Length: 167
Image (cartoon, rainbow, N blue to C red):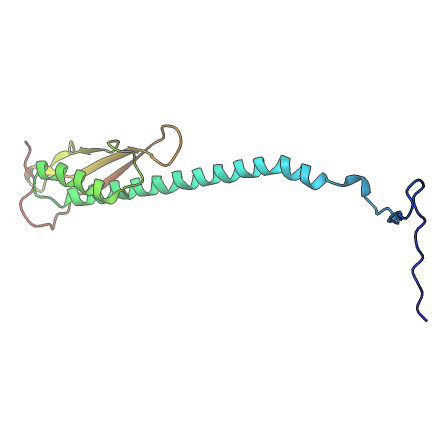
């Protein structure tokens, strides 16, 4: 035998309407809506933390890219056969090794230091070390962040051609 549900008594003053049965109180019933408040407070802080992480990652990647460009430019300059050509090759190589989206337009600076002209193996004016400094202003990071890196390369003694002459 099935049991018939007992009807709830009608509300006073409204004939034919039934009152809704009350649910028993659950534990923590006074905390209703607290998750929404916690989320509203925590979401901006979490978003800010994620943005800081993203900027830090872009900055670290940019430093690595500029360091690689400086290293490659110094190596390319060390393989040249004269001083004038070394500076031009270093500039071209550094600009070619920097991604196009990394630096702001016109902010790439390449300085080639060929001042370490020393006498090597009896040849006056032999180039001992090439130092290239590459710097650029980052385009993807807010503010004016400049990244700079230095690359050094020893003159390759077994490259083709004569030793660079002192200008």
